[in-house]
Amino acid sequence: MKVFVTGVGGQLGHDVMNELAKRGYEGVGSDLAPVYSGIQDGSPVTGMPYVSMDITNREQVNAVLREVRPDVIIHCAAWTAVDAAEDEDKQAKVQAINVDGTQYIADIAKELDCKMVYISTDYVFNGQGTTPWDPDCKDYAPLNMYGKTKLGGELAVSGTLTKYFIVRIAWVFGLNGKNFIKTMLNVGKTHDTVRVVDDQIGTPTYTLDLARLLVDMIETDKYGYYHATNEGGYISWYDFTKEIYRQAGYSTRVVPVSTEEYGLSKAARPFNSRLDKSKLVKQGFTPLPTWQDALRRYLTDLADMPQ
Image 1 (tube, helix red, strand yellow):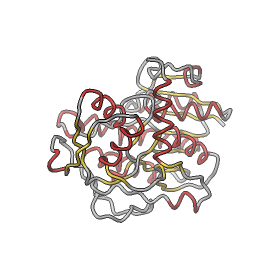
Image 2 (cartoon, helix red, strand yellow; image 1 turned 135 degrees about the vertical axis):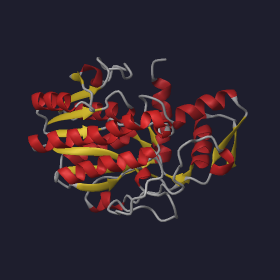
Image 3 (cartoon, helix red, strand yellow; image 1 turned 180 degrees about the vertical axis):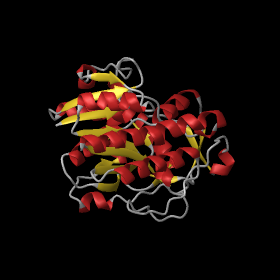
């Protein structure tokens, strides 16, 4: 099985390539950079084929994928800077990456008759209430530009293909790139006290664990919408930060505040990011480990990385 992965310079794409290599599949990675720009940690991804590709260039997308002719496309590339997406001068670019680029990839996937995995987000919903969102719920009402364009990407895939997996995730962390854990560790080193919101509820997703699930999925034809985060229960960012510091051995004090009290962000954030993951088990997939266990492994892996 030959798998083409977009966004390998990011957290998830990097881990997907490594998972493919571990299972003996042929992976071809792509990103915008002329050469692979992720962490150079000696992992298989650094030795696998890489091609520079601008997903907003339809002709380039068609040329590259017609040459590679993959059996599966795992589309990890996206604009993910949520607040920056609200800037008026960036919105056309966000649309081009998250919607138009996804449509180009879906179109060529249809031509090549290959499977496609699209990585989406809890931000496609309105973030209200306390009931976990069902993966097949169509009650969309994104609160910000990021959510609107990720929904646009979902609709591009579902409206073009039949052989697709749309996988919504939340609160992502991985070794390759920036994330909440790395930010909190850095802040905790220099501050005695940190303020963290306690009224946004969800569950973290470790890209290493998610990558395993995605490769499990493409080995099947159990297409459709899925939700995939780590197990371990729903928590707030405040709860998450407390556990980060506990496991890291920090004495930094964490103070809970409301989203309104915290302020700062340009983009409206969902209060309810609870994702119902029961469909995974119903379809025979192995759920991700608990987020507490994922955090423990992540901190160990982070400490082992070359500085």
